Amino acid sequence: MNMDLMDFDQAALYFDDPIAPEVERLIAAAGAGYGSDEAENLLLRAYFLAPGQLMVLVALYRYYFYQHRLDDALVVADRTLEAAAHRLNLPGRWQQLHPDQLGYAAMRSIGLLRFYLMVLKAAGYINLRLGRAAEGEAMLTKLIELDSHDRLGGKILLDVYRNALLEEAAA
Image: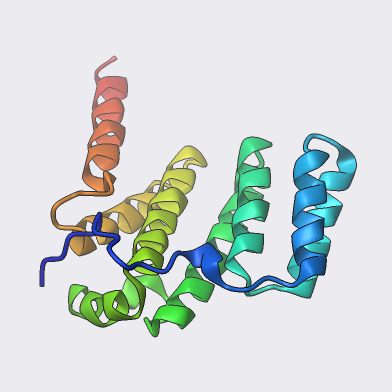
C-alpha cells in the first residue's frame, strides 16, 4: 500500500493530547531555563509525572539532542517509538513493523504515524553518529521500506552516510 505521508488533512498531531497543567508548567519552566542545570531536572520531573506523554518525550529528547548527549537522546527516542507504536496499535518493536500495517495506523492518525517514522529516522541518525552502524542502517532501511516514496528523507540520509564511508575508505 502506498500512502502520502505528507498528507495531513484532518490529522491529529502528537501534541493534541491533553496535558496536565503541572506537566505543562514543568516543560515551560525547563524551556525558559534552557541551559541551566535545573532544566533537565524539570524535564525529568515532567517525565515521571507523565512518562507516556509524547510532548514530554519530545521536550526531553530535544534537550538531550541539543546538549549533544546522544546516548540519552537515543534512550528517549526508543521510549518515544514505543509510546507512539502503542497509540497506533503497531508492534512494540520497530523491526516487526510491516508496510501493510501502516494503513490501519494512518486511519488512527496520519500525523502520529508520520511522527513515529520521523522518530525512527532520528534514532537511526543518532545510531550512525554514535558509530552504531548496523543499528542505524537497519533503522533507516526499515524507514525506506515503510516510506517507499522517501518523503521523509531516509534514503537520502542513508546514501549520504554510505557515500561518506566510501570516501573515507578511498582516502
